[in-house]
Image (cartoon, rainbow, N blue to C red):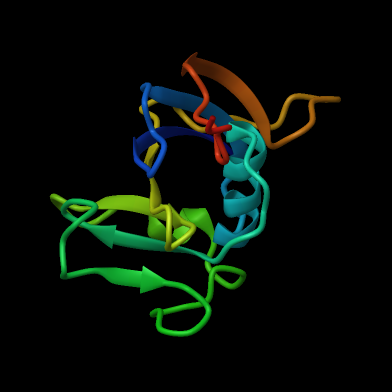
Length: 140
């Protein structure tokens, strides 16, 4: 089944504008593949560590962590469909670059899952709003 996920920039070292996107992807997509999709969508280089976590807020100390060293499960083993629905009052966050702390909230859209359209490629960008942040802005 194809799901629609909403990705919203929450914070980051150089985050100056609001940005969000909706993407369509197979529900069996792994968190590692979602990581690469988010980076492609926002236009970032894949040159830093990352993790996913479930928490009340991006800054909550109580987290269910998905990363390669300390997490409950590795991102390449965990599928998106395994996480949703999330526990009550919890959200899924994606943290990229532990220095610049780019944090994105990932949520499942209320749109009903659908069968893949013949000839359509997934994952794909459905909608984008706001201005994409610059990963490495030029400073003068």
